[in-house]
Length: 382
Image (cartoon, rainbow, N blue to C red; front, side, top):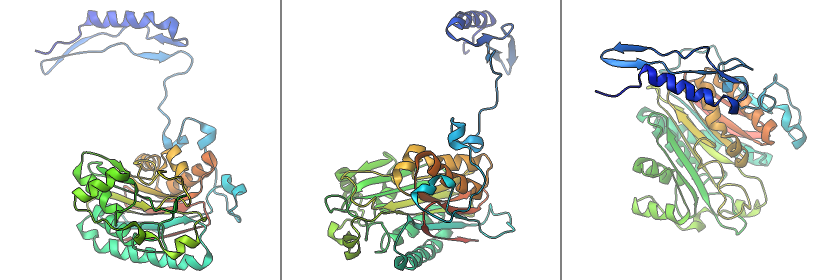
């Protein structure tokens, strides 16, 4: 029979806690130690002492939907502010735009949904339609696989974007300071919270496939550099000459800002998944990792709560763990449209970050928001 603390032991425990009171100013024990033995199903149960604050009563923990972080001032998200300028001086004013799919909304829990983005930033006006067209092709590719599940859909969508020279992933990825390609990618499914990610790989044809192989293998979550390339070769993931990734466009735009591609999905069984891929930022320091291979920063999924991924300058997402924060918010009941708006506002106000997010909540409602000048994205429901 298992041993259990008896009532006398609980009293002694309470006295020990009482001895700590001088070290814990403002705290006191309950008026008396509540100790009781109750037998339920042959098991003894004892109530042990509880602590409470004399200065401030015990309150419900702050939901992230209330303030997001400990600092109320840093997270308090005000009313929507329409912006007419996207310059750095306006970073704290809120997102440049957000999108809400048309209503009224049916019950979407059993309906598949796929959202794809091609990166947020300030691309030349002449390239914006080209990027949007690339995203539409990726949406079509992912939707064809939706019948197999959310994970297969996001993998197909991101793999398609890794073949698009106009997007910053695999073919067409930006160059680092040494003029070399270093690619990051991440994959996560929300049912078992399995994840796989790669960073700073140079010779993997589709980094998202390598991230998926790591997810399936299950021994690791993140592999980088030569070790990741070796894992790819040993697990029959396609490799190639790094020269394949370098295009004339990337050589011309070596100094420009960069972005990320990603997809989130919610299938008819309620399963969620996310995949992201990127070449990082232009002229980045060799070996630099952004948010894309970091679970919780650049992507996150959990069934029954939601799924999200981000794009933009990754350091801001990393400092805030913004995608995990967004999924927790949706899990607390905040609609995806509101979470997306507040997340990009928080990114700008707290760390001065530029970027965007796409997400789907547990009800299957998609949303997208960004505080940069442009983000290519598309969605499909049902």
